[in-house]
Length: 162
Image (tube, one colour):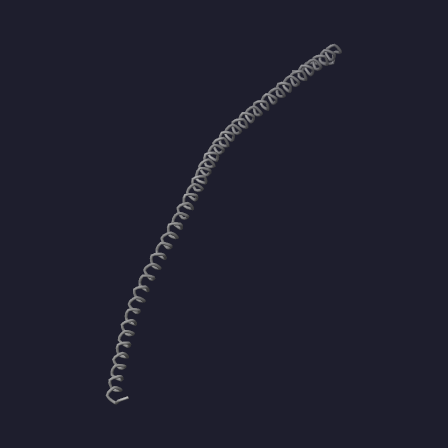
């Protein structure tokens, strides 16, 4: 081999090597761009997928919240209605209680008045009986004294003085 040929072969090899290095560099750049593009595409797809999943979960949570809120409102309505009914029942019971108390007071007052009247009548009857008894006793005494005076008069023991 001649030195010129070897320089030529070396130059040719160098040129091939530089060409291969340039191709490899271009290939690396292309691969980097493709990888970056693929990475961006994957990231965008992942972002969309996560965004969709987040939106779906958020809608699900909002739906559950609305359902729970509706159930709580319905329960609150029931409790409110029950409270209102209990208040009405309590008011009715208080009204009936007050009426019963008034009626009981009136009955007690009436019984008290009747008892006083009965007691007054009994007292009057006893007083009349006592008056009758005193009147009878007085009449008996008068009769007895009259009888005694008659006996004394008849016996002549009675002297008139003065």
